[in-house]
Length: 305
Length: 282
Image 1 (spheres, rainbow over the protein chains, first blue to last red):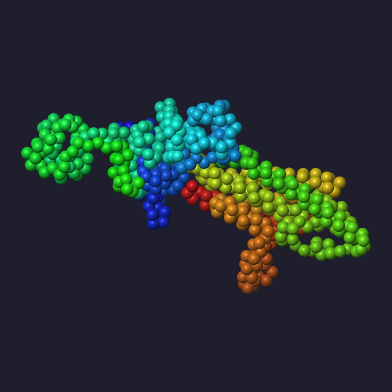
Image 2: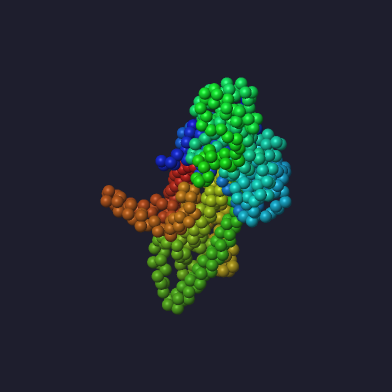
């Protein structure tokens, strides 16, 4: 099992009577790109703010790099973040914005800022004030700012929000490159599952402040792929029948569902064999799901989106 | 902490409003010096015509609590740099420019959102307020020094002659006023950090400069008078009150009192500002 770099234990944030984040337990492996998915207002940003040290949890704990509680202060510099929109001084250029953060970190290396500008694709912006930047350029500079100090964990909150397709692709490339070249662990939130699915290796789905599911890329793909979906009361009773029929690639999803990912044309045979064995079946069908549909079903349907 | 100070000083000198405010202050100082020359010439002319001392003696006795620039020079005397420095500082004319920048600088990182890039990565967020305090000390000293130089130049251009005035008294007064102005700058910055609204903070600090808090001070005075301390005047223990009431030839104890009041306010505002900023979510 990969080393866990970050985990939250019962992380909660309450504003008045409203729990924005409610007992969230996230587990992020070292080197992972963790896609944090949730609708607007689901609690993603609040969660990321707490992880980034910008907000204090009402209760619960964050453990990073083996540190927790007050000791977290010792490793805060290892976490770079871009939360909500990029915070930039509009009357300064990209270099000056980066220079300010370099001063804070005591970084005086030659070409350090130029290298960051190159990584985020802003080498040629010159003295242009950031207030004249496009949203994509601002987002990239925001990522650049998060990279100052060479963090091991990068927290990006909706970095593709509002970007055009080209901008989305550019940001995606940067994130991929950072993971591959610098071995960074990246926590990235979005409400666009389709986009996250192109880069994320692990997923956490949050809804109304609660973490609904944590799953790997493989698990997500398998749940969204074509399958025989069997609906019945006691799935465990059906498992010997499946084994006897030679089905190997199946998964018990919950107390009522079994998903079978092979021999999709044999659903009728399966139905018959289960009936013969006296196992009542509520439903059986061959189905598949789009990523977005999977997410929407999990979070209460499109009508709430 | 040292890195935070370096960061804020770098940021301060790259803030456009710093230079804009300095330029406006310079123009305003030249204008007030010119207006003072017109007033001074008018009084001289009047005096020559009537051969009598007009109301200026009375004016000297009055305490200027508002923002009117009143020249303390007696008719027949030469207008010194100290006279104009006194007139501009005790009217809180210079303070007005300093506090406007303090509010802008104090909240620039919060308003721009830049604080999100750094707020989580510092061990103690309260130190960011301390770093601003140090940067604003440099700003206050530079502004006061720049103003004195400008006043010298303005005197030469407008009055045709430079006379500093009583050097010892001037230096004492300058030192005490710099401390008081710094305290007012810190009060403004801390208020802005706590309130997080440039507009409201700006209104409050301008009201402070115009001594509009006199209504509040009077209410407090009345309560204290009822409690038995008949001679108590709260304004004597406030930064803006001290700026207005510090005499031209201050005694050592008056200067010490001014510095103690300034220091007290700086300490209280910084402790409160940094504590709130440390505990508050960004």
